[in-house]
Amino acid sequence: MAEYRRESDRLILRDWRGDFDWEEFFLVTNTPEVMRWLGGCFDEAGCLKQRERVEACRLRNGFCFWALERKEDGALLGFCGLKRADALGSTVTGQMEIGWRLREDAWGRGYAKEAANAALAAAFGEFGAKEVVALTVADNTASWGLMLKLGMRRREELDYPDERYDHPWRDTVVYSIDRTTWERRDG
Image (cartoon, rainbow, N blue to C red; front, side):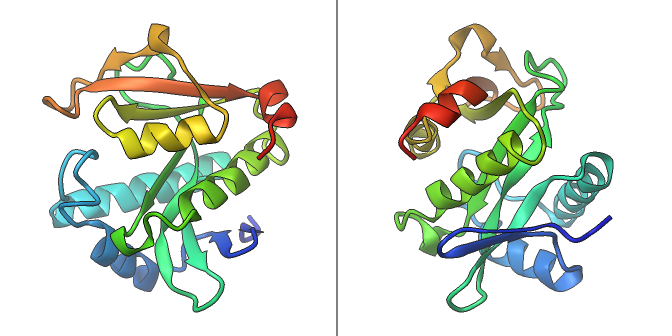
């Protein structure tokens, strides 16, 4: 399988480059503030499990949550990409899902929107998606705010409880965008 790489103006979404990328990713994103709405910080076993899930997704689907690199200096800002929704009890299992996680010092600079736009372009262009979903919790206003900026719409009928978590991470809210809406939006 060829290495995946997609560029935007300031960013590169790319395949992971082994241990160094993963060590840096967890160093800069496995923090209390970044993980606030993602179930809390991972222990070593949790980090390994996440790495294995992302790498298995890449092998299975040809896409994953890619490493997100800033062009200017090569800094690893986090990840952004695509996967097949797979949480137990999910109402969107099997649908293409977009997700992102950026280090705190990268927040508020438009990187998440730029990366997500690149990932959506890949979803609808390269990977043939008809619709893409995004998941968060109601209190994560920054995440669902970005979903709205991307042209996604709230899908209350698809919300579900994720039994792996307790409050405030349990109640999952769903947003989505279809290909037609994506093609008509302003960016």
